[in-house]
Amino acid sequence: MSAETPKYRPLERFWPYADLSEVPTEEELTALDPDLHEALFGARPRPFSITLVFPALDVPAFAVGLEIARASAEFRESGAGATLRYRARFWSSDAARLRDLFQIVGVSDATDVLIDDRPVPYARELWLPLVWLLIRR
Image (cartoon, rainbow, N blue to C red):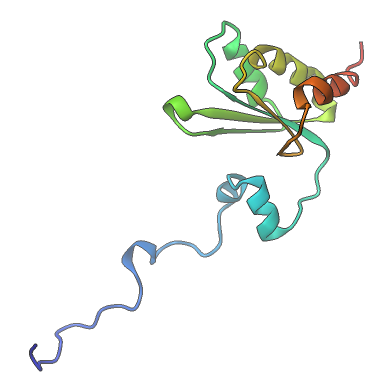
């Protein structure tokens, strides 16, 4: 080791993290897992919701189903390729569109039904038909 004085003094911050904002953007906050968001920021007041989470399916009406999902109260895509999943949230006032989408994507066992963002037993068999009772004929 030499006793020379260094020619430069390194910064006291790490390069890859120097320009990141300390406040998350709105897009980053909406992409958070609902349980993590609730743990960090507390419960968000919102009405009762049912969410369908489904993969890309090889069924003839899937394009129509994707249009219905994109028109839902909240729509999100995550993953890529084989792990691509679509997430569509519906309020109880959207019961008819929820039923229409479920008739298309519900044929797959990979489709998950979440009640207020949580997996609930008998969501397909009990909760969905109860919400469909809200549809006026």
